[in-house]
Structures are given as structure tokens and as C-alpha cells.
Image 1: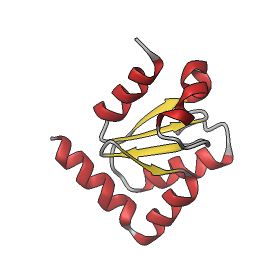
Image 2 (image 1 turned 45 degrees about the horizontal axis):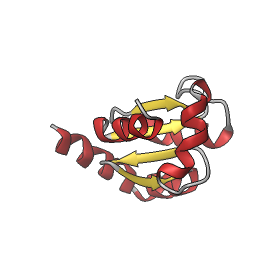
Image 3 (image 1 turned 180 degrees about the vertical axis):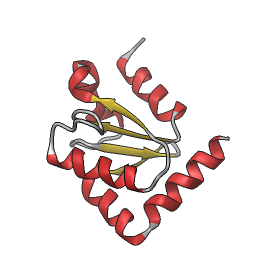
Image 4 (image 1 turned 90 degrees about the vertical axis):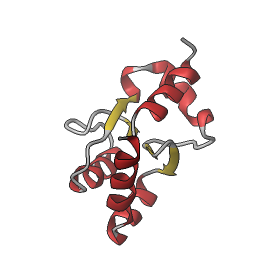
Length: 107
């Protein structure tokens, strides 16, 4: 399967997914760590993809949604952004609302 198709599949199959360096339990960079912690604190299930474990995803994810950095968080199939945007949404309460709505919409 083409790498962009694999990325698209992850985005479409998971109501909330973070493409990050490492895992939520063992993040490999500060930005990924903070973004994953915000997602975890919302108490809504989410998927993760360790971009360091898949060199093809690491190399091609930036062109998937024209976003050059990691982490990348997708909610309801849409890129919401990286660490800074995620933390802003978390602080305002919008992150939990968006995550909950996406999970409910997915059934």
C-alpha cells in the first residue's frame, strides 16, 4: 500500500489520531510529549502513530496535509495542527469537545 494511502487510512479510521515522535507512554520529543499529554488529559480515546518507527511515514507525512512539523493531530479526519494549537485548544476546552464529537460521530 502506498504510504499516503496508509496515512489516509489512519486519519479516516481513527476519530482522533496523533502522529508523533515516540508513543504517548514514551514520547521522544517535548512537543510530542506535551501534545499527547493534552490528548490523554481529555479522557477520550485516541490512536497514535510513532513516526520514528516508520521512516516512510516520517518522510511523507509533511506533504500529506502540507504541515512540516511533528506532532500532527487529526480530529474527525481533519488536521487541527501541532503542539501549540493542541495546547491552545486544550486550555480553552475546545480540544475535549472536538475529540468527544469526533468519537461520537464515528459511532
